[in-house]
Image 1 (cartoon, rainbow, N blue to C red):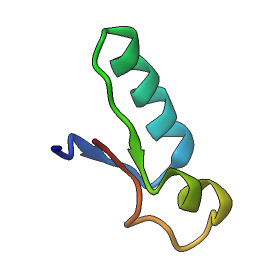
Image 2 (cartoon, rainbow, N blue to C red; image 1 turned 90 degrees about the vertical axis):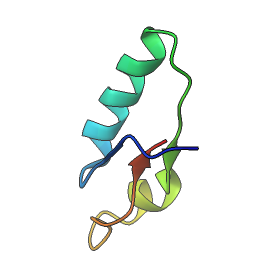
Image 3 (cartoon, rainbow, N blue to C red; image 1 turned 60 degrees about the horizontal axis):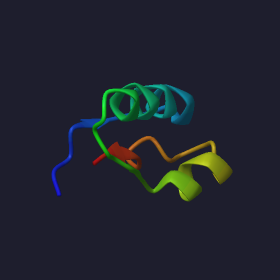
Image 4 (cartoon, one colour; image 1 turned 60 degrees about the vertical axis):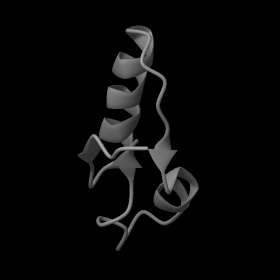
Length: 49
């Protein structure tokens, strides 16, 4: 597993994830549930792996 990019915004991360998957690259968002439910103070969380 390799981190490709980190995000401070869940919505931006989701857009990138969809772009990767549309091109056949399987990926997931690390800490997706945490960053989507806790909107404040989660900027270091969330990475595209």
